[in-house]
Structure formats: structure tokens, C-alpha cells
Image (cartoon, rainbow, N blue to C red; front, side, top):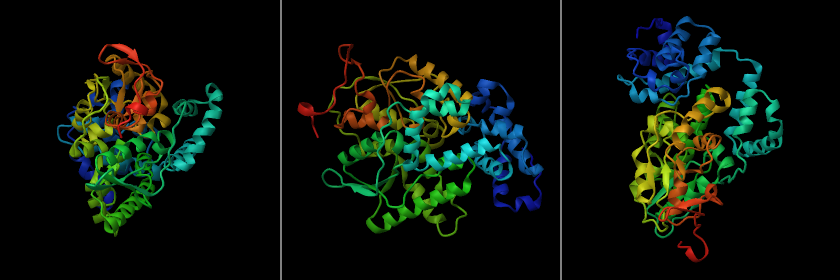
Length: 451
């Protein structure tokens, strides 16, 4: 693609970066039919190729972008399916980040939109603020049908029974001699919505010889802020995490950083790029990013203990986009589930986003619902007993459209190797995998407790 930036514009690092990415796009169009929004709307402006043209025009023309441009860029999920199929590997992930930051700086949104985005940025990144908001949302649910689309969609996403567990800085010691020391990114919204995920992560790592530390000063990864164009906020959060983990590494040593929310993992692994121009932290950011791994990658390297419960349940593993298209971690979760005794099913159209995408299902509820229902139809067609996945956003989104229990992959692996029954399976009737009868899954407690 040819661009027409002036020398003065190209002297600005952000525009120079965008220009370098734009020039690599040759408009082959392989990306279009893997783009969920284009497949739904068949509007070229809702395709990666069309959005790249819109992004090029924004800084070239200068001034505030047109509302139409903002509309189509806002509808991008950042699922990055386009990057998986792009013949020339256009760096779309950093291009759309640049575009969102440009919109945030130059475009005047309506005051309700600005207010909603500020509330989301403030609450979702702070679990102690988000938890009271969830409780207020429960009280407001009866008013849902009277509210406008976005607010009604937000209430629909509130789980019927959130399981909060807000972690304080602390060290969780390995069972037996410690083989490795890992820092856990505790996350933000996940702590308020589904604390059982962090609990399962810590238990299974302890059981497999890991010391797990929640480092003082670590906080939200910055992903949600970045996706809303709030680049300065994202950089501040990333910088705080790098400094917190680097202090931990220098003080007591650190062999890795484990992340159990795939959207967060994609951002932490990209800290080297996000903080590349930040004085005093750029080199440490690159080192920290190299230490980051999804929990499935960590467990795959360690090697899972032999399962101690009869499993055999049919599980339809859902690939979060950030795991599949950004981190390229697809093999490890499936191999771990198989090694734990589960029958792993293939979901048709598994490359398509479920519509969660960070704050997307809150800000773009109509498109998110269309994609959520599409994904739910494909999953239910496999007739699974359980749906595991690796991202809290996907879990929350899919629970709106599916009656089948949805859990984090690490909760199933923890259960299979000695941990308690995942809370989402409590009271759920599942078939007996050996005799094809419906039974309640056994929790490891009382006479059958192993650990």
C-alpha cells in the first residue's frame, strides 16, 4: 500500500510505526473471509483490508476522524484472525492499537459514550471497585428490559453467582521441594467474577512443585485500557507490573510469569513493544515479556501428574482468539486435557471469535450477540459434557448462550489431578463416561480425597 505522509508526520514515532505496517499490506484479501465482522455484515469497511484503508486516511488527512471511520474501527474485535491468514503477515495488532489511540486523542465521542468508557476503564481494572458494581448490577437486573441496549447488555453479562477472590501480595509455597518460582498475574475482572480460576492455578502449580508469588505492586495488565485507546493508562499499568516483577526477580528470584487469562497473556508478552520508548524500563520490559507464559504452557513443560479421578468426559475446547491468533498456543491445552483423560472435541469454525473481546461485548452488544450465538450453535453441535477455555471473557460471554457448564481449562486439570470439583460443575448432572449414564461428578473430598 502506498502512503502519503509528510516528512514532518514521519518524524512522529507513532506515525512512522503505522506507516511501516501500512506499506506491507498488498490487499490480497485472504483476511476478509476469516474476519468475523466482515462475514456477518459483508461490508468491506468491516474487513481488515477496509479498516487498513480507513486507518491510513486518518493521520494522512489530519484532524478528527469521521464518525463513519470511528464506527467501523470500533467494530473491530482485535481477534487477529486476519493475522493468522495474512499472506504477508501485516502487523495488524499494532496498527489497530495505533488507530485506537489516535481516535482517543482526536475524536469527540458523545458524552454517554465517554462516560461509559471511563467507567469501564476505572472499574474493570480494579477488582475492589468492580465487585461492588457487580452487586449493584444484580439489584438493577429487574430494570433491564427498560434500559437502552448497552446498559441492558451489561446487566445480561453479570453472572448469576459471581465467585470473587481478591488476592493480596503473598507467596504460595510448593508442596514438597520447590522446583521453580513463578509470579502469577492475578488479573482484574477475573478476581471479581471467578476467583476459582486463580485458586485452581495456584493449587495445581503448588502440587507440581512451584512456588507461586503474587508480587507487591503488580496490577491490571493494561489490556482493557489499550483496547479502548487509552494508551497512557495501559503504559502506566504495564510499567508498574514490569517494575514489580523485576523487583521480585532481583530480590528472591523469578523463573517465569504465569498468566491464566489469554487476553492478559497476549499483552504481557508484548510489553517489550508497548514500553519500547519508555525511558528506564524498556530493557526490563523485554526481559519480563520473555518470561511470560500461559498456564497451559507452564504445565505442558512441567508435565502433568497422572490423573487420579475417572474422567472421560467429552469436552469441546474453545480457543480464545488471543491464545490462537496472537500467542499461537493451541496444542498445549488440548494435549493437557487429553493427558488428564478427557475426550477433546473439535469445534467447527473454531477460528471465529465468540464476541467477548475485552470490552467489546459491552460496547458493541449487537455484533457481540450475533457472534456469541453463532459460536454457541457450533459448540452445542458437538454435544459436549463440558466446555473448557482459557479466558474469563470467553467464559462470561458463552455462558449467556449455552446451558452446558463452561470452566477454565486449569480448573479441569486441577480437578483431574487432585483438586476440588470446579464450582461451575457443582450440582450439575453429567453422564458417567464409562456407562453412559447421567451422574453428578464426584468432588475429591472425604473418603476419596488424595491430596
